[in-house]
Image 1 (cartoon, rainbow, N blue to C red):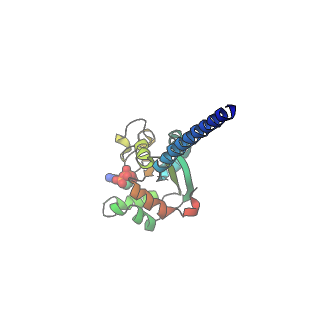
Image 2 (image 1 turned 90 degrees about the horizontal axis):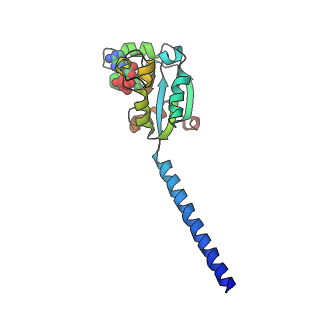
Image 3 (image 1 turned 60 degrees about the horizontal axis):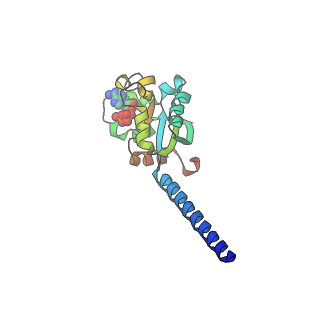
Length: 171
Ligand code: ADP
């Protein structure tokens, strides 16, 4: 009788443990599925004013993890690819001059819904019209000196990350 009881207790404990591990795995797998990567450039005004730490801190505080980072010197060739949607604009020449005026920091940020959340934290293009509390609203000056580039869609993010980083550089 005692043996039978012990068997049923053991079976019950095994069943409960399996159930809770399954729930844990499911919960974590879902979280992993929602993980997304996005691409950012700390523009020359961020570099020159020493804003890298303050800007990165906003993302890290929002649970957006640094997955890759390096400094590079942008040139017209890569800017023509990166800003392909703007090459016909009258201000394109000034973008090239400005964005290649000093080395910049480029980075990959990773987290839940990263593309939309990084755009939201960054704020709209025109810093002068960007709300307080956004990066551009707090640190930017105008449409050109707007601190940060951030991918505008998951498709752009994938393309931009591939353009600037090799898979080995992303952690
Ligand atoms: P965002 O950077 O917010 O995604 P866009 O893709 O429209 O905005 O533009 C890319 C970049 O081109 C801007 O961040 C800015 O540096 C530059 N830009 C856009 N519009 C203008 C403008 N009217 N005058 C000068 N620079 C501009």
